[in-house]
Image (cartoon, rainbow, N blue to C red):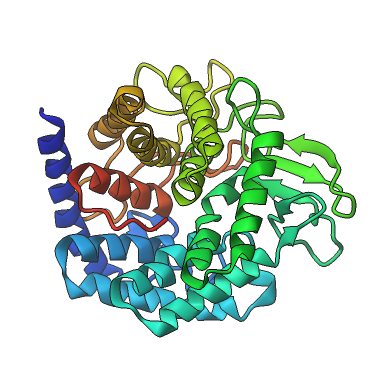
Length: 373
């Protein structure tokens, strides 16, 4: 089927399903499903890093349909996160994931001053996690002993856009300097020569000296966690879009070339490209995120150079929609077989960001996307 017609057909299926799902879950902040129904992290852990993706889905659907149910749910999600903004130990490097998808999206659509304020508070907090000695934004918190004060992770490349947005909004270059310093550090210390990436790097927080790297959510140290690869592709592409510095798009291409060369024939992406040959664990979310990044990368480099990335993205999306999506309205999630971390006890379940990035990717192909990042 023609690509545009196929994407429009998938878009229609998403809208048909989500009209029912949103009504059933309008007051929740989901992470996964229990017996096919979204759970609710409002009371369970309002500071959880994925808690903005439901709001992001709702804004994407509102912009595509104009239906108020999505706007109402998105605004509710955003306001609930005010508890997170006032919880010091709940603020971390994932402020972009939580407030770009909610408050900043709201501000861009409605011009809300309250939403703008939330976004700027989140950006200021993220900027405050910057370690100038090591040129990195600190990742996770710890119990107050400083044991993770020197930790940085590849995921943070996706949070930098809230700093770029704050710079664009306020004209204050502090945000730009911090975002670019972190991106430059990530190029130097996370991206390997072959285009694979590390998940966690530890620095001495006092001197900024590189100490070691960790396997994190991948198979083992030195392996290639696919969602980390996807964060790298999309994150560096976004840094290029915000700065127009070609070194970032070249880095994104390096990671994308490695990713494309390792996609299985099935186009279904494993948890780790270097997991044992007899391990069949998948991460559909990595495929959806990588597809978003590659579609944006293809636009950035132009049709001639970008055709390879566009084709790979569409191939992965076709595989997902045909083999790894649940289109029944009785089940809340769309994307199946996502895996949070290789060594978790639970594997291949639904995760909210799998659904979010699938929607974003399909919307990129149909022209319905609200550009959140």
